[in-house]
Image (cartoon, rainbow, N blue to C red; front, side, top):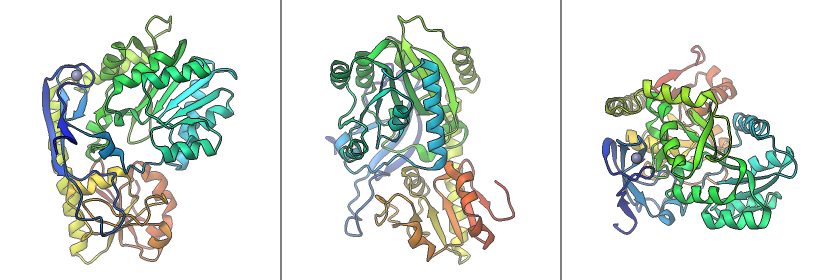
Length: 420
Ligand SMILES: [Zn+2]
């Protein structure tokens, strides 16, 4: 095991090793590693899932690192095409075009560009675009749609290669992938190699403050190494000669922040939102140990409440299925000790996931069409970040007496009579 999983010896951001233990989920299978069929089940390797926070820079992180080939060998994440996400992407493109004054000749480079959906929106706005994504199958889809995508992780070498071939980038862009990258310094070296002096570096990350406040323990799984606040991002970027110049909140993935950074030497105005959010983080106790202890206590309580609620419903003779099979849903079921005995199936629109089985809980993933023939009494809403959209789309299920269990931040039952 030691060659595929090991404890981190220093903080990924500040290099110290002054850890506070936050919460442990014991040993669990890789939440995103969906099994092919029943024959695969039983062989899941279990890895420790322990969360710590750095007492120096307050980066929250997993205590262990797993060999990337093991971790991402089967990773089937495909960017969501939910209407709200596409709308959000359009807003981000508009924000960047306006913020940087992007014009037709400019270059936009996205790392973790997935199937190129986002870059396509940038291209429609005028600039040239290049994507970088380590998943060959996703990079292939992007290239097929005409968005040039390099099948690689983003490193200093890749950054230099793009700069040589296409020139420096006015915008280097990374959405919702920073937390998945074990060596973020290498990514920032890539940014330094590629970013024009008047360019901006953009990242969108799930926001640690929202995770803590809203008990989002299910977003903690092996594929997510780092959980950032604006403060820890500032520390990280400063060590690479970048200064955070603007920050926005984004109502996606349970609450995220959108951060713009510029080369420190550039004469960029720092917007007041930066100091305001840093002050707000301090007032929320981001740099206090008790904040993390209280989160751990709430996590224990909510895990037990979800387990008891679902088991109680099943004991009453009702059927329960999962709505969506996101990686965090897989993590939530493992954290709550729920399995195939309680949850008959999970319904998911992602074709790549259908017909596969969740690791550990061994729950099969069905298409919505297959699920339509086996409508349960209750849907456990694993994709809770899309709750308003899903509940709006499933009025008929509710009107026919169906109920949703929304697990996060606290489990609650939604019926036709109740409002979200
Ligand atoms: Zn640190």
